[in-house]
Length: 487
Ligand SMILES: [Zn+2]
Image 1 (cartoon, rainbow, N blue to C red):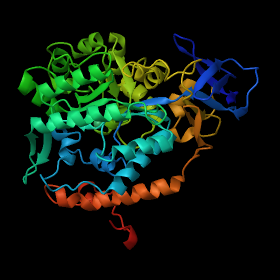
Image 2: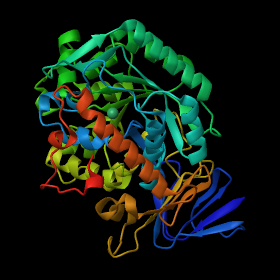
Image 3: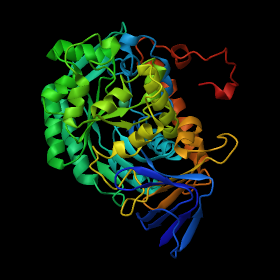
Image 4: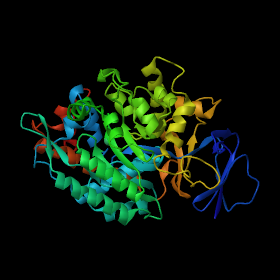
């Protein structure tokens, strides 16, 4: 079956760069694009009108946690009121033995919510860098049922983090547990890579650079090479981690990973904010940006999440100019890839005090082509004959956006994930007229809400100081809730 997307601004890839055709056409047959560029005059079985829309390659979101942006992220991002314990450590580490795993129904509800929320906001390839564990058959079935494209694998580490009764972060090392978890991850890849009609692909996730011992990081990278899959870890994500790696190895996290052979073209690093280039590191020895450029590793840049914590990459432009591959992820909530383009662009300017930095072209490239290198895919992130039919129609023809001259600049300046009107993955229309085509989205949201409230209710039981959610994250104004809305 051949479908013709007709009209609109078509972002086609010419083999070297994206270029825009106004009006243009995209034609796909089953899961592959057969034409992208100028208006198409041949026959087709179906037609999608794209007038007033940007017809764009779907975005590759390099940082999604299927754990629970329902409620988890809302807490995490707001609870970071101490930069030394900034990022996940300060909040998510429980009292040992006090955090019960969420019920299976909640796990399933949050996974579905995360996939579909990301999809509606422009993500067509989800890189799941670690979520709730268990029921991997259910995970694969969900990817199959929803129609999304996912790279994932159970995260592994051999140092779990806990708070003691005084709220001090502790690391609990157990190398045997780490080896078991790596084995589980390898088993996941062997069982599920290529399932869901090829839309679920395996990858390895070494949880965080400082929660994995050096032998586990090496073993993880060796396994990734053997399986020929990408590997991710969080590195340069917070100053606690930076300092711990400095203490343990007398090197920065980036330099350490480079020295042990962890970094190459199949490696994705979440964040890489704290490098020798970041002013807060106060470590002017060596050049982490050069290490990243020479290794071929990709930075998974999550601009909005870090901006919430008053931090950013130093810097998008300098990394780009040095030859580092940069991709874009959301990590936080909302998972709005269109807004991330704007955050990436603006923060690049602010970080360098340079209004020429963070050009719309460069942030758009990062969210599309930038995500393809570590995946080893030349059929994603672009609209060209032979590429996968992962396509967005984004409505730019409305008062909220205004008058459009260059649609990519308009998208970066004024677009939102809520302007995404059609999402096609693997040639299947999953979102149509801004609504999910396969599934009742109100039901998805209702289940996610229930799972999130359950999660919030459980917080005082495992939190070191017994605090309830509203104490950790006070509402903006005194909030008088109706009884049934009380958590
Ligand atoms: Zn993360």
